[in-house]
Image (cartoon, rainbow, N blue to C red; front, side, top):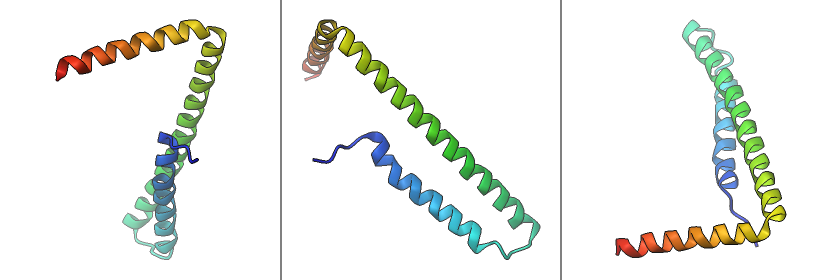
Length: 98
């Protein structure tokens, strides 16, 4: 059974984008025009910034998941009650829309 998460759905397109950008950088390596050189520098900086942002998002998501897991394990009955209440509220709101 394959688990789908937002991160797994975004990983492939993000990796493809980085690969395409790196191929573009390699393909234009021989071009010495000033505008191309400047664009290559900006693209390389954007790739690095994107990788850093991706790592930060992954770290934040992982720490959030760990904190949620810890809270649920420490207070299982409270968690069940909150989940039940949220489910009831959402059900009530959806029912009223119809």
